[in-house]
Structures are given as structure tokens and as C-alpha cells.
Image 1 (tube, rainbow, N blue to C red):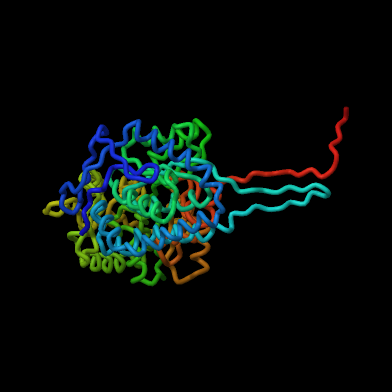
Image 2 (cartoon, rainbow, N blue to C red):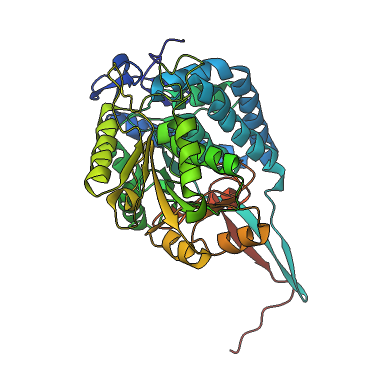
Length: 484
């Protein structure tokens, strides 16, 4: 494994920057509980330097031809792919996610985003509107300085999902990673400069809520993009709204995964495992309410428990491990609290639920059966490896129950009847849905939520609209007349 200690805490104006006057932030490897690095929270001086650099760089960056900006992103994608192993090792140290996962799901996803949006650069065009003798045209223009606020479950991916569309549209960005996972965004900043991004185009500053608030509320910032909890999203959204800033809010979920009795059982079990235990359950779009039609409930549970019992829980640096620790002791304690609530409220613990007796933040994958809609574990986002299995009888019933939540990020249906599959997902009140699949989020398709799960969309062409706006120019070709 590579060394985790970064060159410096921040990356501002094209180079690493340190200011040890900022509060020390220990970086803990969740696999052992050991401290592997230290970074310092951004002081007001560091925040100012980052915003000033982004502001100064934005005009010249936007003045480049879009394809020139696109080439920088595509070169960065190539560098990331060439260094996938070392970037994946760093991600594993930072998050505790198994190297088996990070090798295929983290830096590679970041490269996909940079490549995709770099390739779209030449499509940033407007339209011509004939108006008789006059005419008008539209131009897609950047917003200005953007702030990205990252999450700790997919640090590299989230940074690139925000940076790629922002930069290709001609914006610059100041990105604040989660204080839990500060390391990998620094590498992205370093690689973008190596790929030809001018200084100040992508900056990284560390810190917790105070630093985030300073960025969100600064008058130089035109756009804020957050990936985080619904509760944090409300606060950030309100802060941005006070100055009429653009926002993208990619927030939490309590998503339904609906399995009809004609579903292909093994695929449904596989999807339920992926939708609850991949990344140790720390995925916003997870299908944590698994609705199983009563006719196959016991067969589903039997097969699910048999397969989950084979999970290899251990050191995430070992490629044989497929279930690693949680990101932190605090998050582990939150999850253990939900497990106790599930037991106390009458859910049947079908598997797991225990902390492992070893150093690090390890918990067994946990399956609750006989869960009812009013239980806490069926209503609140847990953000850990805890699956709730609920029974249902009819299609109409399960749609109503699936939508009975303030959140609306994702949803899925498993059935061999594709007409029913389309019919049901059409009625699921969520931004991203799957039929006979779960949690695949290629950069080519939009991703985002409805209701309390956020506003706006990341990825796809839709993200270009989130990081730019249209300017309309009316061209008069005749003399102007007036009544007097």
C-alpha cells in the first residue's frame, strides 16, 4: 500500500499549500483504527486564497475553446486509468472500502466522468432562432466559481462527478472533501494540473462545516453542489438560496427494492446484496427497504442468508475481502444503534447485527425480516449494512407503501413481466430507477433525487445544464420605431 500522508493539506492555485495554524484533522484507517495521516483545516486565509485563485482563473479558462478544456479532462482521465492501482489503494486507506471494490468502482468512475464530459466539450453550442427579418441566438455560458462539497463514501468519484461538468463548461471550482476522507481529492487536483489545467481551475481545501459554510456564503460563488445527507442539504440549500446561487443537491434516500414472486430469485438476491452491503452499506441510493411478495418470502430469506453468510469480512487491503469496515467509529455506533432499535421494535433479526471483536470499525452484514412500515429502521436512512425485508401482497399496495417516504432517490423492480416492471417504476416517486438491476450509475445517464433527496441531476448532458446557463441575444435588422 502507498503512503497516505499528502504533500500538504490543501491544493490551491496549482500547487500544494500548507497552513498548520488550522486545526489538525487526523486521518484514520477504518481497517485498524490507526492514524495514517494528518491534514489541517483550512484557515480563513486558505479559503480566501482558494476563492481568489478560482475567481482569477475563471475568465481565462472560460475564454478557451471548449474542446481545449475537453482535452485537459480527457488527458486527466488517461492519467487516472494509468494510476488506478495506487489511487485505489489510497481510496481504500481513506474510506476502508475493500481494494476489490475500489479497483473497479472509484478512480475508474472518476476517469469515466472526465472522459465523458471532455468528449462533450464540442457540443456546448446554442441555437439560431429566425424571427422574420430579425433573428436571435443563444449562447451557453459558464456560471463562474463553483463550490463542490464532497461525501466520504465515494471521495474520488464525487469530486470528479462535480469537477468534470463544471470545468468543461468553463467554470472553476473550490472543492471541499468530507473531513472523514480528505486524501483523494488532492490527487485529482494534482492530476488535473499535470493534464494541463491552469492554476486555480480546481482547488481543494480541507475542513468541516465551518469551512463549508464560508465557501457557500461567499459572494464570489455562483453555484454550490453538495453530496451528503438530507439534513445537511437543507442547511446548505438555505445558505445558497440567501444569495440566489445555483445548486445541485444529491442527498440521501430510503429507497424501495420491490421483488415480485415471478422474479428470477438468484438475481433478486444478488441485487439485494449489492443494494445493501456493497461499500459496507454506505451508498445513498441503496435499496434498504426490500419489499418481497409473500409467496417467495421464505425462499428469498433462506437464499439471502445462505449467501450473505459467505461474505469475506476482513482487512480491506486484502483482495480476498469483499466486506470491509465502516468509515469511522462514529458511523459504526450510529448503525449499531439502529440495529438495537430494530430489535426493540419487533423486527426479526435474520442474520448478523454484531460488531466484530477485532480492531477497526467492523460489523456483520445485518438482515431484518418481518419489518413493518412504521419501524424506525424502515423510515430512517441508516447508511450502513442493514437490510430491512418487508412483506407485500399486491402491486397496488406495494407502490403506495414504497412511496410513503419524504425521500425519493432511487427504486427498483424485479419481475419477469416487463410490462409490470415498466408500469411499476413509472409510479415510483424517485429520480433513478432500475428494472431487474440495481445501483448501476453510468456517467451517460442522469443521477439525482426527488422530494427530500435533492434537486438537480449529476452526470449525462443534464449536468451541463446545471453548470451553465443560456444567454439570449436578439438581433434587430430594421430601423427601430417608437410611438413618440
